[in-house]
Image 1: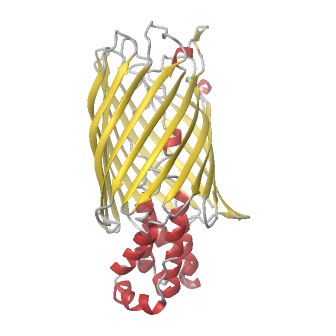
Image 2: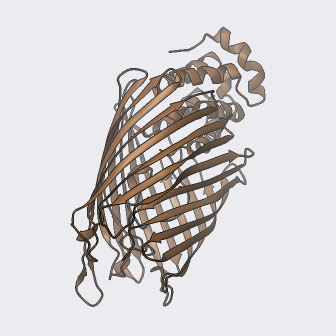
Image 3: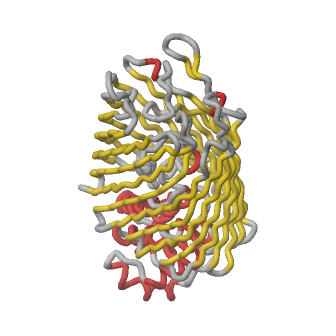
Length: 520
């Protein structure tokens, strides 16, 4: 452990904590400890609090310390949500009894503002990424909070959660004409299990979404997924990681690949990944590989018969490397290379096309962070894809991924992002589509427990070989009220529309959501 004695810490902290700030020397210590991994960072955080418990005595000082520790977590590969939660737990445990709830709330809010910039936390993460057709440009909006402390079972911590929602949709099929409206109920239990070991780590997750429509029961669905991930700490600078997922999902009706069956198209997804994370001083290296299998069910037709989807079944294999160098505590340039191969089970699809392909992506970029207030991640490069079918031209196009999170004030957080990808499709005649999307979200804390949010997104999909381009827009606003650390209620309004140069592909859709969530 890299802890300093109380005598060394006290004079460094005294002036800063009154202003709700953390002394630079403490931030440097946390940054140095973070290089040894999550366990060392948490040990150092405990040492800081042992040296000066006053840092957890008020909400302002606790929030500042929580933010200083949380910004170090983004560099880790893996499921980082448990680390963010443990930061809140450590600070909460050091708070005086009369201020414990206020301190946990403030620390949780501060860590959440950092965690939403972490790709491993935002949304459901890499595991439940939709394989095709889901081109929504809405940034992940994780309802999962970092404040719940979980239930300890031996040396594991269990975080049970459930969200119950109802929503009205005025165009459930995403049709250009003959819109059908309905009301649906969604029940979504979730469980997250993390290890509580000094070295190594294991994480398990499971999730179910049960959707029931009031009138159109053919649209009912049950989606689920379960995943596991582990990290082996060979040394403080050498980590081996791996994991797997299996789940069953349904394809959104607004997808261009939806063929208007009598019910949504269902598919299963299985994925496994493994890799190595290695540190060399200020340099870090990550190597990894992923294998994935997608299996689409045939879809019933309204007048009888089925839509054959066996020609969409496929295997995907990818491997990549990332190297980064920390120029300063705020700036880290990096370069990344990924190669992948997509192999379809069928030699040709129902339209006679061989959809096997191979490609690569090269990107160079940097992350930049300012005192837990601004996070910038920008990378640009080139993407290439070559198709087995001679009727399809190869594709070379710019690659871009950028995200910015700016905590402009303690109450207001702005997020913007843009990304580009080459994606598979089953649209007849199209080899693929190039997707470019981006957007902006704003979150404003009206009070400590009441959050106002808004979003605006835009995405364009250019289907190569099919003379089709879609423009997708989405706007939304919402209110979220935290009843206490374990319960919340929320309401949202969403407006979507698509403009396409293909007749019948346009649509407009309005949705109203009411949600209730419980977390422990």
